[in-house]
Image (tube, rainbow, N blue to C red; front, side):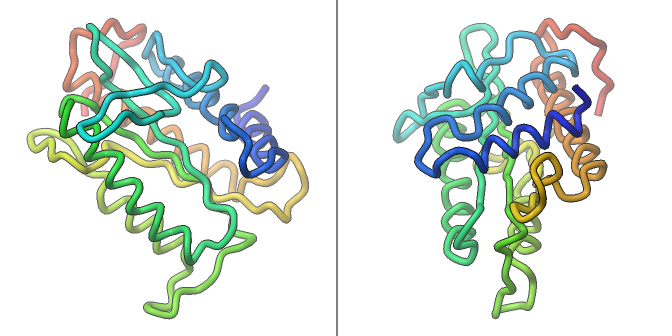
Length: 213
């Protein structure tokens, strides 16, 4: 199946499941694990195999995609969605993101963190504060902290983010907005995560040559 169809299929399943359904983003996590493996990272866990419990400074946390090497988690990816009540959800999601990253990095600063966020444009609204759409504001805010890298591996920041715009009002199989652009941004996300991982952990047995940053 072509990547465009794969991604749309993942999002169709998201909308087909109840909000309270466990592992609602499981097929998207499977997509992420496949992409990481295609980029040369073996042994990635998550997706349909279930979320992974990772110890943090304050508490254990479930992560959607993870890579473990030499007895420690080295790469974690969290998948989130904002489909309704965007004005109320966005601030909470940003707080959650910062807390999740800090919780695990305080205990294990070597962990690289990626964030994949699905946003439904069918329910997007404009902010009163600055006139930006909530989707624009959120993407800008997340990208402002997705800057973690050498030589300053600041805790509480992210190595990368992938912002996936969808529209639930579109027909099934065509809900990803601007599929080619979205896939290109996803490609850049996975490639960057692998490159940063290789820069920090060169002993990892990658299955492909990794281009340096």
